Length: 143
Image 1: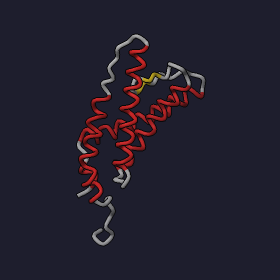
Image 2: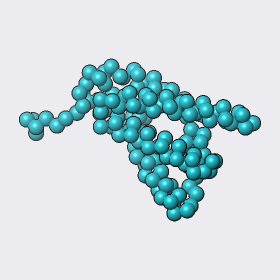
Image 3: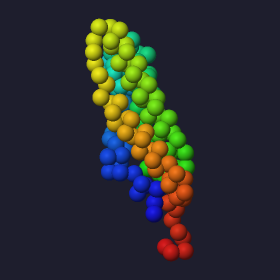
Image 4: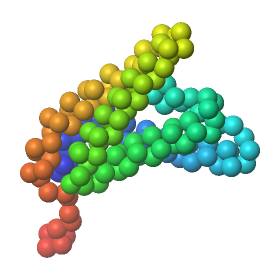
């Protein structure tokens, strides 16, 4: 059994989405370098606010999510730990964004927190089995 088989379809779909998201993020950074103002939002942080600092935060979040997806897809030993840490950071950022919105007189519940919590729960659930399985390697003798 491969480690990748432990991942449900929705995590695999999320990994594919992140591949496209990192490309769009790189394009947005390119627009910024050309003097254009990209509009990126993640976990309630909009790159238009406190520009360019929030753009850097949003870009870093996209990059960390992409790294997490790559580690999971390529069945790396530290993938589960990184994915959990990354998701907990996302949960914290959702809460910070929520509190900032309330402070500014708005009530915007961050629905992103729900899949993040489910993701952390699932990663913790498969952690021990992930550790027991080895990454998929090509067996040269059977090839």
